[in-house]
Length: 382
Ligand code: NAD
Ligand code: USQ
Image (cartoon, rainbow, N blue to C red; front, side, top):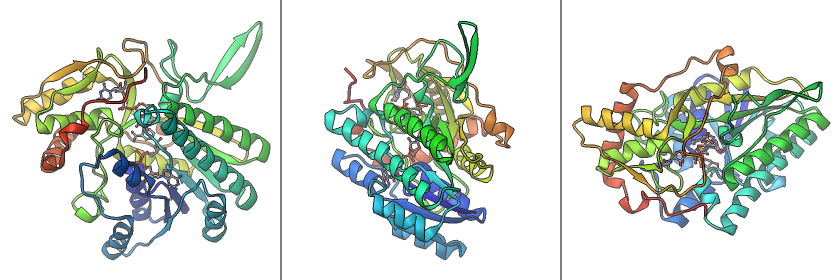
């Protein structure tokens, strides 16, 4: 299958591009490299020294004989998107290419606007270009579990059946996002659903939980293919951050009580979920939503798991409860459905002691690259 991976230089996108290429799909990456630029402007960096995207793709080709086409460009440029779709003719378009940090979007007005313009414009450009050039292609769009917020009822996969005044309808699940970033994903969802309805496009919105881990079969044991791993207070996410904090002897930064529960998944499941979505496309005119996570955890629970794994590795890991920089519920009901991807064949890698110990040893290997000044949160929601 011909699969275009937008955002293919990023954390999820790089692992996915290699996984799909290794499985025999024809892959092209589109990336503006803006994430590397944002890191530079904030003074943060990935734990791992990543090669340039040109070196990465060339090394993959030399090592495996497989070719990945590369387009360096910004999908907020409509002519660029049109040209790529016209010349490369993808069957599936996997869209990871957005500003994805909630704290980044909450820095100030400029970062909120930058986030929503990048995300909403890029997705709209794709929709218009698909309508014009490849209306049969399938859009596989990365959404987020955070679109739903923390409702006091079970979270369904995109839709909920509601009975009201004696009538019944299947409606989009209510959205209560918790940052200007998460709001941008809700705006995308509405735009994609509308485009499927009016133009008969086909799309799958993958409402992904927080991703953890770094090694996939294709990126392991090869420094030139190593994936990025963020630990800083803007782009680093909960479990990855905790493992790196443990490796350098920094107390684990649990925000508030740590009762915040979210869906999580191993990056090895991210790549597989994308392949499942691509090879089982939505019908024409269908807007399908899958919840892409495998297990639910509270943040304190994760910190305690890392503390235990650290102890087994001979590390003394402390947990600190710091004032929550975000506005979010710290104690709440959370029960989200996640059966649709498993029905299509996903076999989850559940979080295990062995994954935690391998992530800890990976973090220890690169610990001299950690800037301790980038760990405590500096962006607040208030
Ligand atoms: P990332 O920042 O590592 O990668 C995103 C990539 O997209 C970067 O390489 C960036 O340069 C590129 N990009 C951004 N805007 C672009 C544009 N306008 N044109 C072209 N390229 C552009 O992020 P990630 O962690 O890999 O996340 C990928 C996607 O998955 C995002 O949409 C994110 O919302 C979603 N997601 C991520 C997680 C997670 O835990 N990492 C969880 C749920 C959902
Ligand atoms: N948290 C801590 N300590 C930390 C970091 C985070 O307690 O050091 C807490 C946060 O307050 C939050 C939870 O952990 O309650 C998750 O935060 P996170 O930074 O790990 O993840 P989040 O901001 O939600 O964003 C990440 C990705 C985003 C994706 C989202 C999936 O950056 O792209 O959309 O996970 S979800 O959370 O399901 O919306």
